[in-house]
Length: 400
Length: 131
Image (cartoon, rainbow over the protein chains, first blue to last red):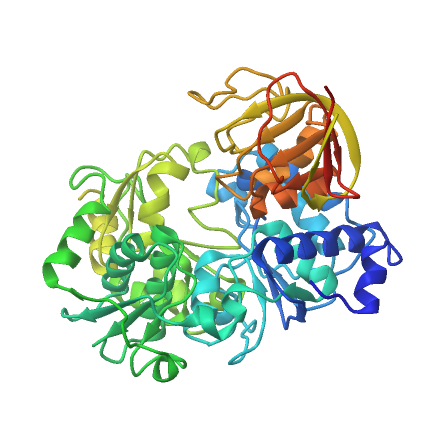
């Protein structure tokens, strides 16, 4: 890999040990993946923020870098708890103490505590063809696919390294040749709900692994559907980029000759719904909405469904979103409707990275395919996957 | 004495006794950061300690949190002194760098046995195997 004199000097330690380590990481990754050089990035999204996922090891590492500051706009992924309402969630003092230490360490580095997995809904929105270094798989997939920005699936440390240097190695999804479709999917079923997009993404993700699916026949999807599709493709298969004909910005310019084609049918979507649930009836301890973080329109939808009803005594309705969306939802009255019905709206965290085992939940209902994929393994809970309407219905009844 | 050319992943130089695995390793969930013992059931190195050894394995796997586990092993003084991979992947490469463990990959020949006395020279991208 070719480095310019300034980069060489950083690599030799002239700009301190933290930047030296950061550029070593970028160069090592560049060498492994055959990058020719480092390229500038417009923003960084850092995963590895919850104490549940990074533990003491991650905490120690982040604290060890306190002498340095990030040089590009850098936002954080969700933590393990609402930074204000963690006691109400049932998070232990021990967990909270470590979590707050992690957040303080990141603040010291100059990272912004947006603590959302959907930073593109809260002002961190890259433009077409902009190179970025993001490390939340669902946000990576959304930024590449829907916004047409360019990022690999970074890990926490490599994203942070990019934030300290302001650059990333030029390989993978930064290059045109790796943004070409590997599978054409003719969608022969109408998709209405966010969970429909999630069910399709979960199924197609398994087929393409880390390939690039090209969807045909998806009728004017809204941003919530595309967010759900990004999250599920990324969680089930490691997809970092998809195209939708007539919708996403690069779909018109990719090469489709010789790309294998399949049809996605109503039977396929039904079996995906079926596979994403580990049980189908019985009491449900918690209904979790907002994976990735709920948009304002998703808040409106939940508010409309629950308004005037009551969440059953034996269960909880938890909605996860960003601080900015919660504020808007409060102004627009959605928050009031949800809270009045007994629902709880939390920011800065989500069900996937919260210490769910501390809450005592055994069963969960979700409208997110990503949450349904991770729930049983990351949080050891039985999971029902369904539409937002079905989830709210379960919340009101207390059982499925 | 045999010198084998490699690619540098993480700088530094160290000597130790080889522990060889022809299976991939997940540091997250696979190695106890407090003891340096391999805890992944069914792994060829199960119950063996990698502390102070030259750890030689095919490649890393599993969660990206594995990078932090290498850092934690190092802080706890339970880390390998050096590592050789058949082919490095990001989790172990990043972990070696942040933990300051000398590491090389792509050795010209991948032919090592347990107990060999091995020097990993991450400055010059070579491995020296003593007779």
